[in-house]
Image 1 (cartoon, rainbow, N blue to C red):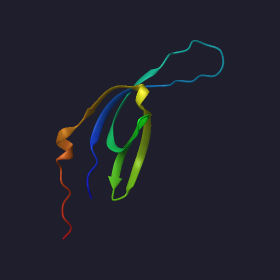
Image 2: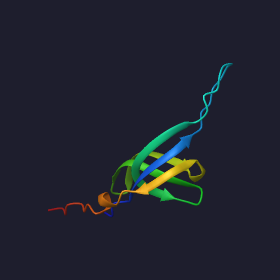
Image 3: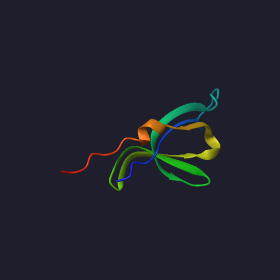
Image 4: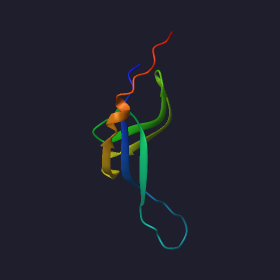
Length: 83
């Protein structure tokens, strides 16, 4: 199994409210995860991967991303061979 790249992403999240009151604006979010998919419009990160499956995935629109970095050292970890 090839281990996907691990990405650190800072992004702005949309905030919704109902009823009357002050609007708080957008929230800054921080995510780290395995890069499952990337298109021209969004990236999908996952908290865990195993074979062809993934868990706790989030898709973030690229327009919302403020900062993005690949965590290079984590990509060099090789899975143990089955014995």
